[in-house]
Length: 117
Image 1 (tube, rainbow, N blue to C red):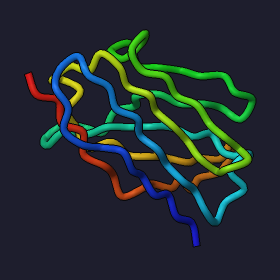
Image 2 (image 1 turned 180 degrees about the vertical axis):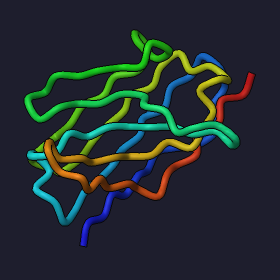
Image 3 (image 1 turned 90 degrees about the vertical axis):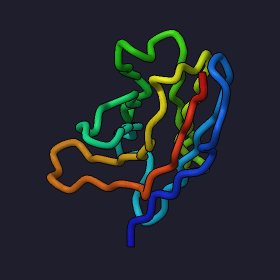
């Protein structure tokens, strides 16, 4: 059974920092592209950042220079360091795992991030 468990969300003031963590089980973590998405009510879930099997990363323009995604294949863990947070970063953040060429994708339960102005 595949599980992605996020942690680290919370309430922070604008300009502050948070670190999100996602621990995976039930998959060969090193073979999966891992990503963070976020969603606010009434809007589509959007990609925040992703890290590929080889370590290459990709970021949404809105978070470039502020967020850093990383993975630890030994610990089956995905991290998202979020700095200089803005109120518009407020959302539920989801961990995602997908394998190249596969149709199945896995999601965590989400963790709330709230940035107050």
